[in-house]
Length: 283
Image 1 (cartoon, rainbow, N blue to C red):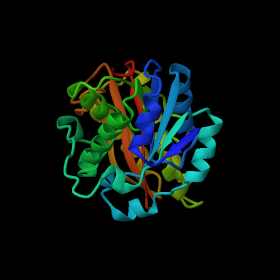
Image 2: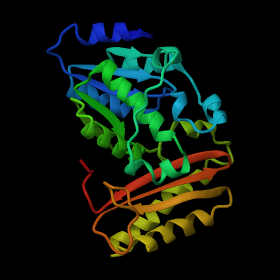
Image 3: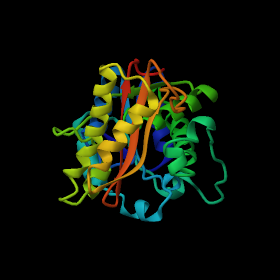
Image 4: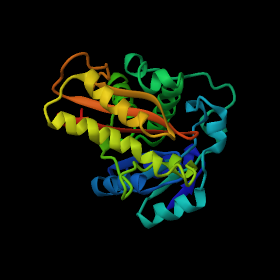
């Protein structure tokens, strides 16, 4: 496995054999089983696999979150080597955003709700860095997790609009044995907060059960999730959403498909989770 900080090395490796397909897994490091599931999918579907490890400063709306974000590059590289990854790009901030950098990528409507409303500027940071990753690696396929459902929708929109010559592959959420969605942020939970974090999955399960029983009204589904979160003393709801899976517009009345999603503070740690109802994964 080749590890580098430079764009030149990535491009030299990528184009050493132009006929080979490449899968890219963008990450911010501190890898867990969710990331590794993306790597395995990429390994199964491509001749070569590249992984980026970069804690992207321009997608954080709170400096404290950026400073607290865990960084474990040596451990991450050991995990990736065991999975058969070919290339790891772990650039410095000045490589990604050199002095004088002033070009950003903005996706409009689909970024204005949910995480976009709660974290102004977040998706401009995401789309800018992902566009740069696509340009540096020029992969055949890029792999993202369903846990960040809005991010997946935003990146799909960007890739369509800008005609990136690659396929976006979104893979299922990977969960801990108790149901908590895997996230690097889980490491920030205090011991007493870890059990309380399961309230996100309980809320989604309650709304999903209502859907299975025939409930199709968006506001009723949102109310079910809100009520479950409110019953957990250590949890504070940021938002609960029942939205169209593609446009992310909130469902007003009844629908045949829904993306249920939420953001919840457990202590000081902000967690997200989601589930799709009544529809295959959007293309």
